[in-house]
Image (cartoon, rainbow over all chains, first blue to last red; front, side):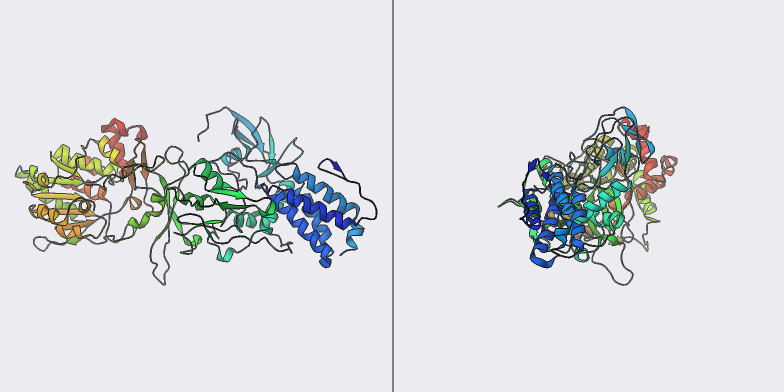
Length: 103
Length: 526
């Protein structure tokens, strides 16, 4: 799982939803706020993931996360947008089943 | 502000070959070719910011979408502004912006005049997927003498921040916090009080900064606009006058609702000062709309049709009796080049009138940017036409004068009513051309209502000697007509050189005649 040139090792006992929550919170917080996709996209995804973690997730939320992250990717002022989109996209795609069990 | 004339190169926009200036940006090249690329943060007055991401376009050979506002064109560059990828990216940016936008268009003063609305209408039209709570921010923050900031509507284009940094250099606003919590705010203790503050509401592409002078007075879609020139100082800033054409069932309190800057890189760039923007009450208040006849012999009823005949007859009588030394003129420098030229020709050249004075508003203070110290628009024009701008001297004016032809309402501000009355009482016949109903009017036999610059055609010479033409933006009230009309009729009436005057159906024809007589006015009419 690569994002902003870092490797994070996660064991199989860790909830992937918790990982996604941490990742999206991190990038939402790291966004400087200058450009639109990174500023609002990261915060939006973080808000969705938090809602899923509260048990209020809906089926279509997973697709929303994928759609929003790909709308950030490649469209931002600096590479932070891409750095955020990559782990979000890979977590959501590769662990879709596990995420779906929460909604 | 102006770019050097560079060589032209060929690029392709949406497969069409387009000539573009070397060194220009994709956005400017497209604009020049008539293709609008949506943008929010970019404003031609400032260097590209690249933060809104609305202007993304696809360029052949580039893996990512590129910014049209900052990408410089290259020979043979192939740009797509309407490809699926571009349209999808545009939609995505709009979706992000609208997710954290209050969507309070029905109560937003900018509705109908808002780029976010326009772009959603053109590229968006999607259903909202945003189910989360929006960020709460300040909705009504007073940030200056006439400005209200709504942080929730703000899209962080930072045009306002950059304007205050680069144009007024007062730096009152900044972006505070980061991420989704970023918001434009005023620095502690600051307030936007400079003479250019009104430009902020104009450059704000959304409803974040609104102007108290305009807020909730009308809806922008009711307004029509007319081009004009600001007459409140000698800079001659190009303006747009936004007026309400009126409703059929009830009367509105006013017709002019807003003055906006009109771009002219030679004169005012993109801006106008607050004095010009908010000082438009002169267009409405106390306007004269009927010919006033306080004292008139016989059963004469004056109308615009016979006014020049009436004046011509009085002047001719003095002229036959070799008494033109008994004629005096009071002029002002709100008159157009054409009107001043006709006045000079009729009274100075032909009738050899010597008592010509100017009554203008007293000199003000320049602000070092656009506002000059001369509170009238055409002092330079009067000088170039050959007038010696002499202030009114009441003793010299009244002594031996039989006939006074005065223009403008400014005389009353220069002298006490008592002094004015005693001087004017000595003059037998007095005619005033004025746009206002004013105490001064009672001192004259006849008062003829005239159109203001916003209501007539002509040209003005600004402080730097730039001659600028203008067309009527508004209808003059009631019986008001422009002075040039009565003056060219009067010239014809006086018989001297009447063929000369009969060639003047318009100010344009007068200006072209001026170009032949006065080299200064030639360049525009080569």
